[in-house]
Amino acid sequence: MLRKMGEAVARVARKVNETVESGSDTLDLAECKLVSFPIGIYKVLRNVSDQIHLITLANNELKSLTSKFMTTFSQLRELRLEGNFLHRLPSEVSTLHHLKAIDLSRNQFRDFPEQLTTLPALETISLEENEIVDVPVEKLAAMLALRCINLRFNPLSAEVRVIAPPLIKFDMLMSPEGARAAPP
Image (cartoon, rainbow, N blue to C red; front, top):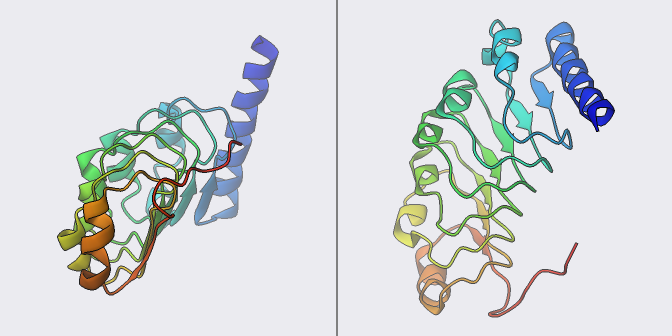
């Protein structure tokens, strides 16, 4: 077990170093078995954090993200968090003014993360395969940049299904009522 943990730590370190050394605008820590965002990464990336526009933390074991994560990577354009155990976002997500796309699919959201409705550049929200029943349709309708929201395989209320279509000017993807995602 210690060997596997050591391999996972080495993999994360290698990926972070690649980002720093190449001057890349992408940090890809997908499938690294992370249960939290490693604190040491903030220090390593402190001189390049403003240059990072895409972070992928998909398919880890994250239960939460900190406010420090959101404020450190304030220039993000895309945030990929699918396949974790997230059930909420820190309020500081509202500081991501340049964010265009966020993928929160296959997490544990029961409530729609309403802070997302304050992001002026947000074009795409994916919340597929969560447990969301209610959606702030009016706030979403007021988002000028929003082009698509994916809510497939959520137990959306009948009210959302009826009220949303005439109010929105973007694509709202929903599964038929009662549909469930296939097991992995």
